[in-house]
Image (cartoon, rainbow, N blue to C red):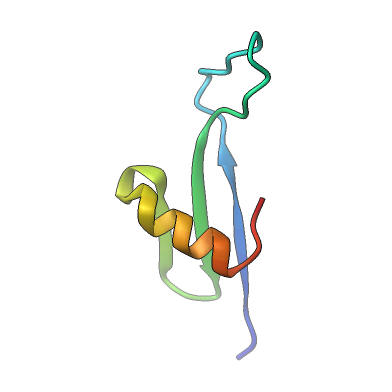
Length: 56
């Protein structure tokens, strides 16, 4: 069965408008499937999946 990945940010309400930096916790999900990770599960792990799947 073909699938796809979704990556993005969940708004945590901690935006810092003065710096213009993106806020929120990053996530990575494989659909269909049962694999999902958040920054809190390991920033290095999310970094790896984001880089491998060209997430921005």
